[in-house]
Image 1 (spheres, rainbow, N blue to C red):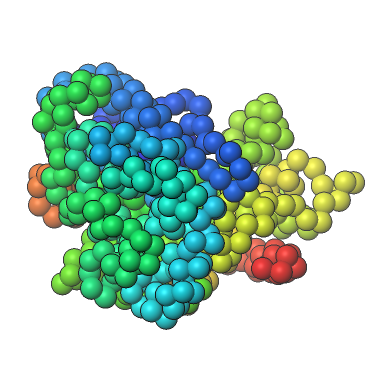
Image 2: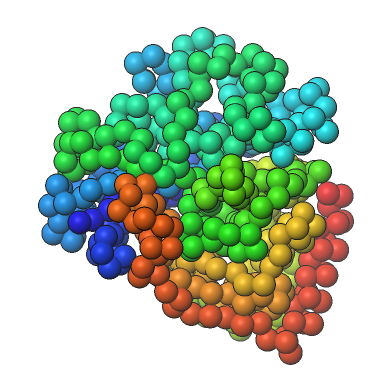
Length: 495
């Protein structure tokens, strides 16, 4: 028996086939081999075609079964993880009406900010725990205001993972956790936020049907099964946004536990039992996948958009792909802590929530042409990413999220020793790396949603620590001094 997990990112669609009994991945693939296109028709815009998500999911599904020599009928459940905060709109026949407005698109900021002020900040924070900011609700408001012909045809809006599941099953459903990610959830009434729907003029019929996170959510249609290479009738039994799912993948389910990821964007995600919020919405609170009314669990999320994308930009645009990421990591170690005064602000991938939705762009400061070389440039970039994350971690601590141990998958920026050491030494927290990723976690979630695993802990058979990075007390002062210089430069921007 096997479970299949998909992780729909903005760069690729990953698939993982999990052996149910051992809890070990027997095959893992991703498509495309180069990154999926992100279109930017205007500054601050970021869009993707949902059809490319489906195309790559089909390729990944077929490839992972072939790699493991597994029969389609032996896959008993499907789980989906997906890029958060995106918007897909469809008509009554489920035809996509426009490209998806994805997570790093900044166009909706004024619509969220206006709602925040018009509805009253105290009321909004008490009920939504966040400003509507640049999230899915505000993106739908942008469509309504700027593309009325499109909006007139909208029968349903969906998050990216909802769309992928709908292509599989023909059913348009979502979860309470998903609606909270889009800032559609009222934490006081524990239902969709009617006062926000009324403010924006959204009819409640646009909402997908709400299903539990871990539960049957539809079955593969014969058409979808043929395209995926799977058996018709296979149930979809789990879905979650990529960051709640990353936390689930790492068995981060209880208050005080912390998960981190550093792919295109960088995220630190802590679990709390308090429905608390940052008054400036620099970090955001959602329903965690393990939330139950009798045992509330909230995910507090810090996101820095410009993380791995900065590292890949340096490799692709500055270095013209002449060296590998491993070689970049080796070169970075040739520069000292603090990169000899070279400072990088990594905010170059859309409006940053941690900066109150400001979009200052990425920049290097203090460049000395007779002193700084390529190792300084790479080190300053990687340190700048960590410094930006630490800036947000301090906000998380102000809303009661403790930080003692950070759990992460051994992937993306976490493969860089310099990145890991900087994070451990600056925060003073040990970093535990695990043999998992988002697709792997989605497959575990599928098994739990099917009921094969009776408890969450049973679902984590096969999960183990691959590496632990402890802070070095002797180095902490140097890293904190470098962070102080970075913070001074950030403050000079007027943010």
